[in-house]
Length: 512
Ligand SMILES: NC(=O)c1ccc[n+]([C@@H]2O[C@H](COP(=O)([O-])OP(=O)(O)OC[C@H]3O[C@@H](n4cnc5c(N)ncnc54)[C@H](O)[C@@H]3O)[C@@H](O)[C@H]2O)c1
Image 1 (cartoon, protein in one colour):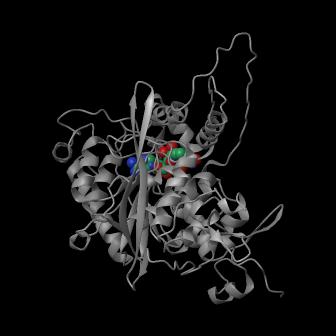
Image 2 (tube, rainbow, N blue to C red):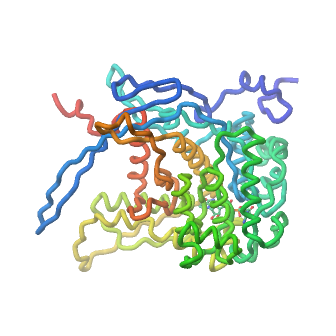
Image 3 (tube, rainbow, N blue to C red):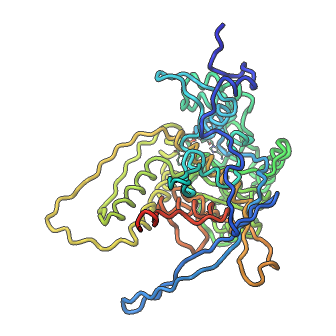
């Protein structure tokens, strides 16, 4: 029989690499960048780089702006060894969770599949880290040199993530993928045996008050009882066991379960870390499952990311994360409509054109849409979607009076595969989060050698590019502009290897 190009469970792993090429977005490229500079030091364990943070303070008085440039230097230290990393998803049996697991397994086993257009290769297209590039300089002929973002610093390869998690639905992972109806049949067929090896999700916390009543039918895999302290201990034990079973150095805990209703912020209940811990002990009704998961991760010293819109991060959670110097990030994955809307708003405003109104209609499908058809859960989504263009319009100059001008309307219809857009975001968030736990900093001063390196602030606002309603350090401004979010990320990653941020000045092309 002629050798088959399609792999699947029965093809020995060693043969795959020789038969099939690996998609560029899935390639391993260790040590791709080496910076030669007095600002960058390499040891076996660390990359340490000096970065000059340049800014300006502005004094406004009687219409006069007095600008004083500022500069403060820092050292960033990145641990070079990428530890064994796990990704535990809450809602792993849903569309996003099952699609992400299948994507990783298809890449790990290099499974190709047939569609009506031909043979498809597994890849990580859609991942900003693996499929988009940054410019790092010019070669000897003056041509720009770009590298994938994932080459800038040592990052986890998605194929290496240990996969696990919880779901209130006890359907096994191969069946969950089938139920999701996201992937092509020929891919499902081949990846199913690998998915089956993941087994069924761990039982989860289910408080019917927090998600839509229409989800009750699938809640057959729940942790017994109503004691919230016992539920917290249960989840902490699950995280510890997963870490031990898979010999993990780091385990990112990720909420991709259904959107919950908003939690009321009640003084004495969830407004401080101590009040929240006491409220959990008393099984207070306003403590949501997602908040319990976040608290469990923080107490286990593992990062927690919220991919849904609800206010998991009540003030008590943020204070607890600060206290334990444990990392958190959220909220809500920025996939189809929101991304398009914010990019368009930014383009118009930057072009000096004033959008008068933005109206969007989102026709949701699948089980998530079903959950969002209930009013309290929809409210959470509405809040997270509502302010995505606010800061972009803020610096705008007031437009002229419209008089009898015609209104120009941009009408856009975009149809997207929700879970295929969301899964690369989950991957990027998990990989970046793991990286940010390995980066420390200290201020450059005369006393620098007496200073210890400190971890970054617990709220990881550098994740904003992938999030609809970015959680930021309390008291600081939210940046929704996609360009500014990407610039911040690129500048930070480059700073960690001692490179200047991106400049499109290209001065050498403007002068003699
Ligand atoms: N897909 C996207 O483009 C996108 C974009 C932004 C946000 N999101 C958010 O991501 C989340 C997941 O989306 P999806 O399409 O995968 O939804 P889904 O309904 O297919 O999956 C959610 C899963 O969560 C499970 N679940 C519900 N409550 C749970 C709990 N307390 N513990 C454990 N499991 C629980 C459900 O059984 C289900 O399997 C939703 O909150 C959605 O709003 C998705």
